[in-house]
Length: 189
Image (cartoon, rainbow, N blue to C red):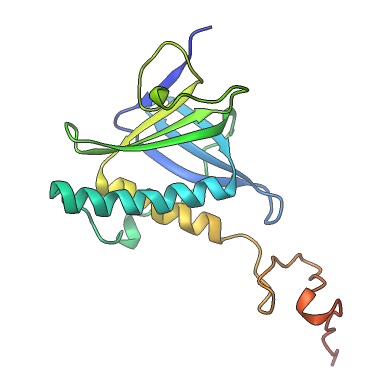
């Protein structure tokens, strides 16, 4: 079966979001353009890495190509709306690709589906017939920076961290290794 490549050249929206409660969240990237919507499932770490790499790519593009790249995103430009529902997973992301399209002056994000076999690097950002399904999104530098800002916030919106050991706190707290297994109990008034 030939691969399916979902291409969004001028998406109305491209965002990171979650479904579920902190500690039990599923992370998605969602692209919409007119009536089309594609959602892909990925790991929290992948969202974090993508956000970080977009920032690095934008700095490099500005330095090497002289492209105008905003250093930050104005608060009003960051999409804070939830994911469009229903969230239907097209595929789980395995490999991610990131590039700069000089012709359209756009950041190109490509997300490839998980496969049993190793992905040949030549398939990333290419329209070959063989290979895993893909989602390819073109973003202006401003939209890429706004995506990265939201993605960082989504990743950081999880459970609070223990101030002693920096492990995530559950609703009931946790047994902190820095306290040798003892849990402080707040004195009731």
